[in-house]
Amino acid sequence: MTRIADALLACRALAYGDRDRAVLRLSLLDWAACAIAGAGEPVARAAQAAADAPGLCAVVGGPDAIPAQAALANATTGHALDYDDTHFDHIGHVSTVVVPAALAAAQAQGAGWTTFERACFAGAEAAVRMGVWLGRAHYQAGFHQTATSGAFGACIAACHAAGLDEAATRHALGLTASRAAGSKAQFGTMGKPLNAGIAAQSGVECARLAALGATSADDALDGPQGFGPTHAGEGAPIPGEARFHAVAHKLHACCHGLHAPLEALALALADGADPAAPITVTTHPRWLKVCAQPDPATGLAAKFSFRHALALRAAGHDTAALDTFSDALATDPALVAARRRVTVRTDDALADTAARISIDGRATAFDLSDPQPLEARADRVRAKARALIGERADALAAIVDQGDLRGYAGALSAA
Figure 1 (cartoon, rainbow, N blue to C red):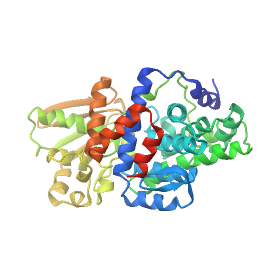
Figure 2: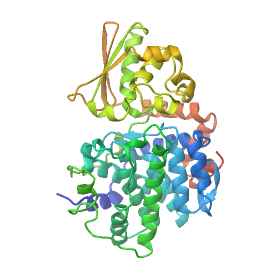
Figure 3: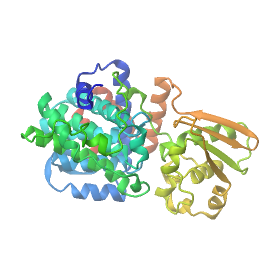
Figure 4: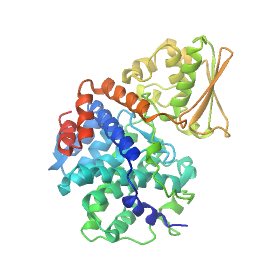
């Protein structure tokens, strides 16, 4: 089996085709819109305030800072709304960790858009490969894969943007094995977006340490006491081809585990199902450890509740709107009563991208992995960006299409 370090290093040389570029640029637009929209969130404000060492790197909604602090602030801010893209191979969020690391390292190096974009691609592919290699067992054990696998993706992105050679990049990956961390216990709290921020910061810092001559154990990732074996890693086969193009852009403002049920419920309601009827949702059992909070008391916790999300949709609330997941609606008596009519069941034969809904004698299903035409996906991502940041979305999309790194960083700073 190819050693995982070799597989991660190989991401820097992967072919970067038109489809890859189109999907990545959608993610660059999507992440930036999420970050700009989330810049006023309390956790974002805390992370921005922590970026207090002046430097050359853009910080969303704040003054420029040194690379590691900018990466921490931007990754946290981009994940503050939990509305950024995810990848079901990786089992976590990708862009919110990788893009800030690539951006900080590229700006620190004085690099241009091409280097930045390729660093994002290499880092995203590395995060996905690390997620696949660690596998579902790692996630089920309680590790937040956005943070653990993501830290290695951030490292590859930062190393690529900084122009590190293979030897230094190997050492940076090994050092990241001592820094990658994050627990699912933080879900529904400010700790979750901070997990993403710390992962981006770790990748940038470890790349910097390796550039300055710091070294690491050769088997820090897959040795007997390496990261994988000590973190419930499965050591699953690693894909040889690019996989980031399968990224899923979130179209509901809540945990991605709730998206397939929400889409399935929408189909049933469109078919005439009574929205006041009891609802039974069937999902893969692994989501019970992620988004099955039965009685959330805050809007943040409501983003991780099957019962509440489905009750919202049945009651006619727009689950794509940020203000739908509010403290007021989480405790609204009518919705609290409605969510008690939602039953959650599991089926381990069901893909973790799929869900089934039974309501008012109707049965519907939806699978997020079903192929969607690229242009249809682009339309929905652009519409989402407009909903998040208004007319600025069109200007931001043009900046991404033109490959303007200074304009991209400036749009983030001006949030």
